[in-house]
Amino acid sequence: MIDISASKVVQVIFQAREGHIAAAELTAFIENLNEDEQAHLTAIAWVGRGSFDAEDYAEAVMTARSEKTTPTSDYLMGMPHLAENLEAGLDAMGIDVDGEEEDLL
Image (cartoon, rainbow, N blue to C red; front, side):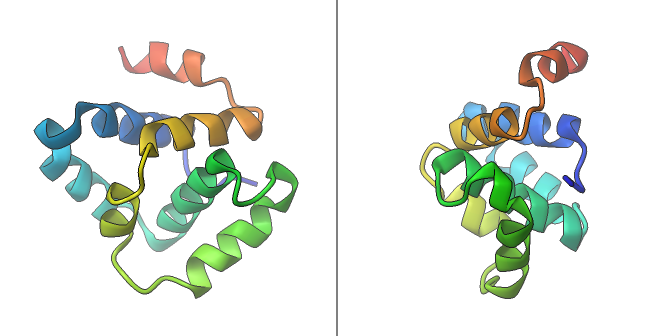
C-alpha cells in the first residue's frame, strides 16, 4: 500500500518538470515529507524506472529505507527523468495521474 498521497507525488512531478526554476521548492517539499513518505516516493520512482515491479512495491519501500545514504531530495533530484519515473510508477501502481493533475490545476 502506498503511504504517500498521490497529490504529493504529482506535486513533485510538476516541480521536477520545472527543472532549475523550481529546484529550491522541490528540495524543500521533499525534505518536508516524513521518512515514510520519502521512502514511498523513492519506491514509486524505482517502480517507474523498472528497478522493481509493482508487485514488489513493499520490497522497494524496505530497500529505500534500509539503503538510504544521502538525503532523499538529493538522491531523487539527481535521478535522470524523475518526473517520468514517478508518473510511470504511479501508473504501474494503478493510480490515475491525469485525475490527480487535474485536481492540482
